[in-house]
Image (tube, rainbow, N blue to C red):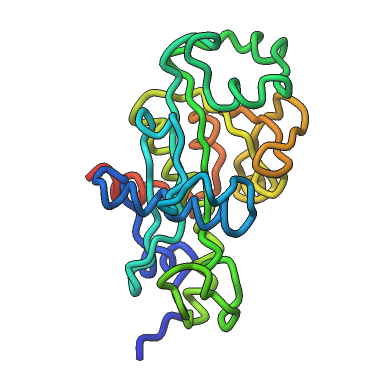
Length: 245
């Protein structure tokens, strides 16, 4: 039996999870499946009958980059995230938050950033499957083929990093694609979680109900890389190497 007690949280995550660019049709299907279970079945942000194939997707997915976090032992998708690039102006090619949450944005504040549109993107659809957010032993039967995931103590600790790992994967995509001015509509917990990691978002608008209560935030890739805690920077480098090697 392997002794994992001396592994750091980051080392434990690397042992139990892998991160992939979702390039193939199979990987994209896994992304949309996680989103369906989280957004439609669990939190009911979208009606299940809109997605008879049990895959939650929209018009932005074809132009987006997607990442997956996979649980190694079970080869089960645990989380996902996407990067939506700005491909035109706000009128003719709005980002999702500009299209669906425009009234919540503080346009005067955003205009002062004087952003080159070609450097702008949105991180969205960050989701962690409920099977990896619940205590071992709870009923997981509504998550398709997942029946029981009997996590070890180390695996349970590692699960707490899935959302952070998704964000770090998205950050790697912003760096590689030079889309370094980043927007996101986020639930209140995520900015607080990131703050504990040394990553501080700037709020650029008011709360709105969109897939739950969310608010618009802005951050630059440079700020993320310069301020994240050193152990998380190690995780970031590992994730970036994993998805771009």
